[in-house]
Length: 303
Image (cartoon, rainbow, N blue to C red; front, side, top):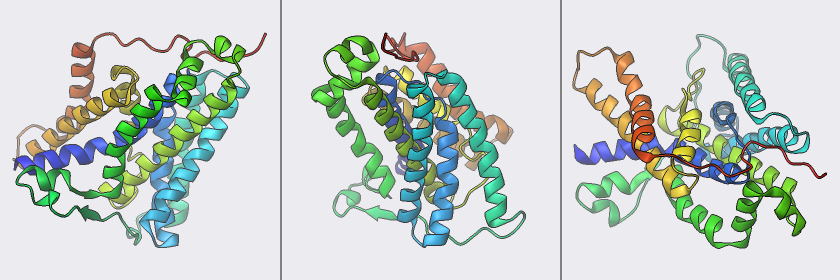
């Protein structure tokens, strides 16, 4: 029972962790991307469509990442090149993502028809490690995106805090003018971090549709994109902090599933609220004040 509970936590935390890891970079570069909810939703649909027409979950996930990158390029053009308001642009992407995926899903797969046949991610059992009692099956018997998500954390942490590229990203978010005077291309770094974060958001969405549910439903992301943004903020803009916040959400999700499985008399709608309420309450109450980069949300232009 403990092993199943841990496995559910990890599965539920994975899409948030993937999206949040990418967002750490764009937030550190000074770009607030609340449009990640719409990007994840688009990635979920493109993942299913790619898997259905190309016959492979891997190709579906790659298509979702490419689609996420294209949306990120559009977002970067508006907020980095044109200096548009980041919150307004992100909100527009969320609204567009909801409407576009609803329409395309009905056009591609019809309304009220059978769920399309798609290839989905399969579990990869790691020999020896998966045989460890209790924690083995919980930690080492997952789909490929799960392993990728948790491997991304140390890689992203090392890249952000121990490399020149990471220093350039952080300097752009803290003081873009000073970074510009020493030859760092502010626009390029901000654009690349936004595109990269949206690629990962697309992958996170495809994991939801090809890994957890095995089909697409309208608005299936259900606020996980906003949770990823909150995980970055309350994780104090670090990959490790985002990991802890994502695991907290996963614990709430696993707890809700457990209560429903036990036949609790509490209406299921309240059960569905548990991970969101628990995440916000714990993070807001115990993590303390998170200080954003000094130029967070501010456009940059040369005088």
